[in-house]
Image 1 (cartoon, rainbow, N blue to C red):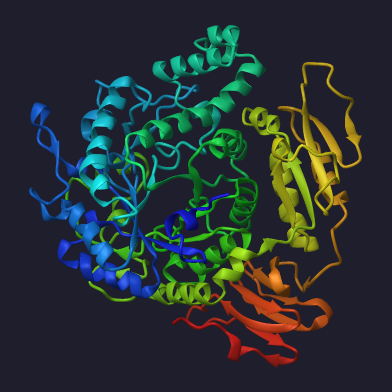
Image 2: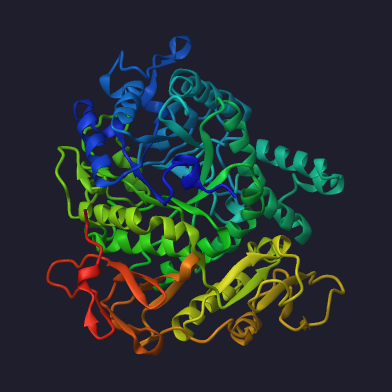
Length: 632
């Protein structure tokens, strides 16, 4: 299976680093120096959103686009791509049409959020807004026609001239966090405008469900449980269908990828709605990545659980991770936090590191700046969005290094040394739970109690924290096995039954299998199943205070990569098998240890903020500082 790192930089042979460069916020006089310095810091691929509203010029019949800087040097995307190629950087372009990126209306022109276009309105009546203005439905034919004009211009005037293999543009991102940030919204908040209802009915008809299609226009309170489950599936297919339309507008060559945000394991409806969309997302022909805007796993155990569950079940690479936003969490200004989060994703299997943004830029005008009144109406202080954008980014627009530059150089040095072993390794799992997709598709509508998937997420976190056991996650339709067959590790199965039909009797249908009423609150049986699964092997390490958790990967030649993570506000100590090594982890810190057999090959740890304790590794009774990877 192709992963994002291989599509971006096939010859790298290691996980690659993607650094976001918001050129539309930076003085063009700084572009060349910024890009060269990002390459020196370790960035392999520079990513860029393209704000539609910024590149559109003229009105009405005179409307056109500027990508060469003829009306404003800051619009010279073609020149930017030449500079990136000159700096030995590959490029990931993200043309939207909606980009968010803290740009006014997510980069859409003002007119699309006006009364001439159908707003994006959920089944529950909620209108999706940006700066207190209604966003348009991207299934409205009039909106699609406008969006295709923009995207065709990007395809013809930018991508066709710079596409791989002869140019630096190696990949295109389709949409943004779905299409307009909706890929982890509750299912009843998914676009249900008239055009969306019509598309849903057409999708049902294409599946031979004509009776259900006739009911699609009814009010939500008249929908059956079966129709709601089909809507849960449609939520993913609607997004993927729009990705397909965008992809078809662009020339062959660049890879197509999508970014889907991780979902909270505690917000009602969020995790199951995300999981319900995975049937279509994972079945699409596009590379799926994820964004990490779901809290800080270095400081919050609930956010840690969201990352753990989402990456284990989604199997995605990171395409957008916070390296500079400090508006709600000042810890992102110091490298310990973004390095912790990057190491967590790498140990869970990501083949990429994302740095958003790689450069703190502060030069932009009114077309980009968000409306202060609109922000205040949504409860946001406009001062938070004052320049520079992403003040904690590793590089400033003027060329200075911030503290996070150390973290970026540290990760680059680690990946240069041990990245190949990471790619060749597999995550060690003590057991595996396979999930019937019908459970989250029904659970996405549940508003009372924990859903089976929610209880499963809690159980996975608890087993890792309290018992040092990693429970892998997968989809039952991808592993149509009887419990325990063919994996070499214990397997548990969560299978749905229809609560309105005869179904199967309550309780396990077979050893290791649990049949659950779809849409009914969890009753503790999921946690009990997980706890009862035997482990594949003996415990490999211990945690003194049960604060830190450990993930391990094994590769050829007896190589093991062990990651230890402490997302709590207290210190902890991890002890290896037989007491051969000890790792002291202060609050909010992480470390990765690479070994071959009984030999320590090297290790790295999150940098310590000023006046705080550092991570310490004792190997065979001696401090292992000589083998600690340092920033290059």
